[in-house]
Length: 345
Image 1 (tube, rainbow, N blue to C red):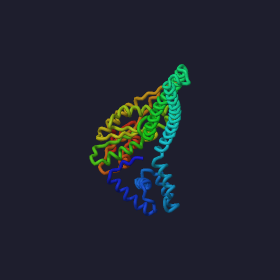
Image 2 (cartoon, rainbow, N blue to C red; image 1 turned 180 degrees about the vertical axis):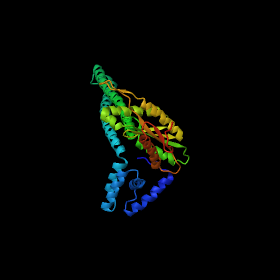
Image 3 (cartoon, rainbow, N blue to C red; image 1 turned 60 degrees about the vertical axis):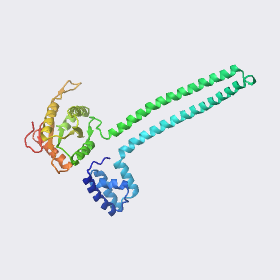
């Protein structure tokens, strides 16, 4: 769970959260601060709903309920992925420990053989063991300890590979919470956090949003199937990624809707990018393997808007959404800007 508010917004949330905690007799610990801070920010409607029902029922939020809500709503993804990786790591370390213990035991045995052999050689003619027996015993035990050491080295090499895999898995699971698995684009969570940070920055420059929605996508799915629909989404995602060089951020907003965040860009910049993408999307051609039919009816509608000083992130996105709705209502496959009534070229 990330918090991207600036200091003024954070202070406001804290001022609103503390009286609620006092009102409902909520213990002032960091866990409860996080819950009620999130509650007053209205960023997680499901959490707010559960908290409202809880205080209505109990007059407060019991400790066990608070802990459960914190796990389920604040750190659920982090806990689940970390738990699996921790279990695998414990298993790996236990296995290594067993191998190390066995190697150490055999090393100790070998040390005793060496000591006995040295003693026998030092005794010379008084030794009960003939020289051939001492050499043979040393040879056998040397081979045994060498084999044990080689086995342990192999296990260490395997462990290094497993640790590298676990590290990659940890990085992947951390990224999974931020990336849409179908298109490979970042998701709405990343967009919201980046947008909030941008408009909260005191040295904020121009920021523009482009929203786009694939036209008649439900009809397309009904006619050609969801697998073909997924291919269209993947192709559109690929187009967005290829045309969104940093610092531009393209995300899958949800369903067949995508969003592009353009820091340091004007309304005209956003409109030009939208028009370029509109043209590329309408040029998509998909050939069906079974029938040989070529699908050439894929288009998208776009809404573009530039940030107005002082407006909230929700209002900013809503204006882009209104422009998108206007593009659809006026015939689709076009770009509309929030502050203009004609398509942007």
